[in-house]
Amino acid sequence: MTRAFFALICLTFAVLAQQSQAQSLTVTTVTRPPFSYVEDAVETGFSMDLLAALAGSLNWDYSVNRVDTFADMLNAVQDGSADLAIANISITALRETQMDFSQPIFEAGLQIMVPSDAARRPSLLGALLSQELFIAIGLAFAILLGGGMLMWGFERRAQPYFDRNLNEAWFPSFWWALNLVVNGGFEERMPRTPFGRLLGVVLVVSSLFIVSVFTARITSVMTVDAITGNVNSVNDLYGKNVGTISESTAASFLNRREIEFTGYSGLNDVLDAFKAKDLDAVVFDAPILSYFTAHEGRRIATMTGGIFLRENYGIAFPTGSPLVEDVNQALLALREDGTYDEIYRKWFGSRN
Image (cartoon, rainbow, N blue to C red; front, side, top):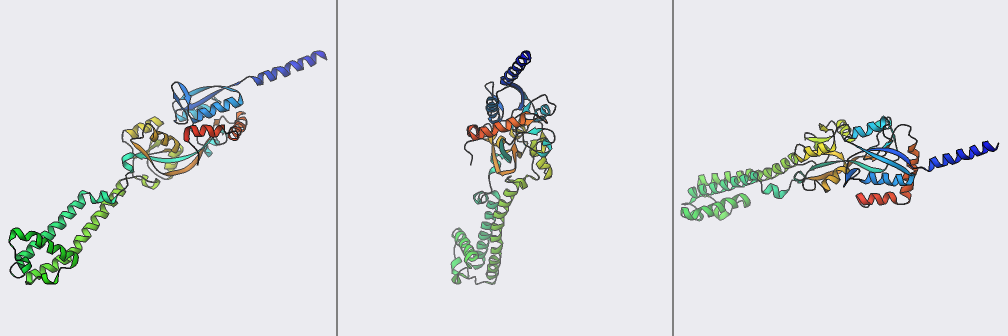
């Protein structure tokens, strides 16, 4: 009886000692600034800071396996070679059938990134300074000057206003034609010859053409600029060279909208294509693209439109993992004690 009691005590202490030891886990991730990347040989980013906070709360000892692609990261969870995966992993219905997720750790969505010079909107000033409008103005001046000089030729002996030498007649003749078109002319300067009166009627009628040319040119320049210029929403992506990462939630969205795009194997590949000006727009996770535009791409890229297809990021686990419940409880504790908000502010500023 004594021996049995002693054995039970020893077993109890052994179990307690085992539980007190830090649990060693394998964590897989992929480089996705600002969520997960390496800086000065140190694992850093929002997700990696959150992982460190969870490890401290749950007494974990973990090692990080950084893989090349997002697919490799998820495959490591599915085949059980990793205990969990963390980065910017969207929680989707399809992925839920293949692995387990923690409660959401970040609310995100998709957004569009375009070259900085493509964010310019059509403007009235741009239309006024266009070559097409200068041509229209030149044509109008030529018609008025030509009509005025023809009137001088018909009326210089019949109408005192036109009784001038050629060197002195060009501006008064032009001014007469301009007043005729704009104001309908002046009674005391009315043409007196048959040809002069006919020409006056022609000039008045042609004024409708001159005004319409001005209006049409300004409108056409601004319309063409708006059409060929810039991507401001998802509907503007049709017919553009769009890029994203293959098999991502962004790729699924573009497929559903029947928007043609080029799929790349990784983030660096799509960003390299964008920097090489092979793409008119990139559609991907808003925080990732915003980080790029604020840092490496601040002079060449800008975000446009609002966030769409809102989604949540989570921590991925192999199906049936016993870690999920502990992680969820720890996440709730980190939110309640302010640790989560502190990490969020570090990387993204205050939340609205």
